[in-house]
Image (tube, rainbow, N blue to C red; front, side):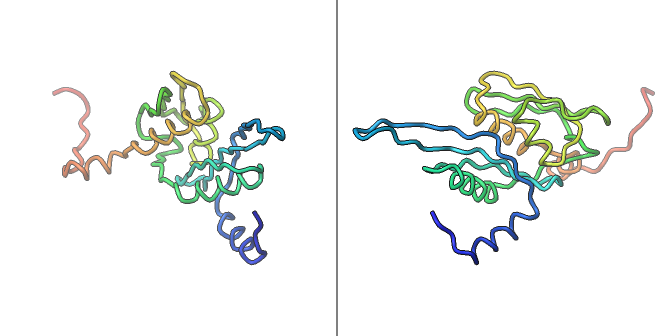
Length: 176
């Protein structure tokens, strides 16, 4: 797949606001009469470290083309992650297929304590303090989808109040 120079320059300008991280490349082969033919799948995460993050899987006969496809898919599948004081607002479990990922907020200075995939996604989303545990299948693609499911379902206290149509209740100090 060839690109002309003008489109390449436009693509570079678009991606400059996002950091990218390639999580893994998978190689598959099929045997034909003349020999084996290889195809590649790449999992790429894009993020601006300010709450926006996206994930894409690209497949092609060559690795660079698969990575480019994954980047363009990730750009289309961006989500906003609510980040409060460098962590997530509440505990949540994201699910996909047989993979489940527990995501928990953490205090300042804790850092991101997580596996490779949840750590990469959290860091590119701008989360600096978080705990996570991968439950069930540890397949990287399913874990990535599970983390995104958890992030999509996160709500801030302000969003919940707006959905319920209630005002902020004053905080009282103990029982009366």
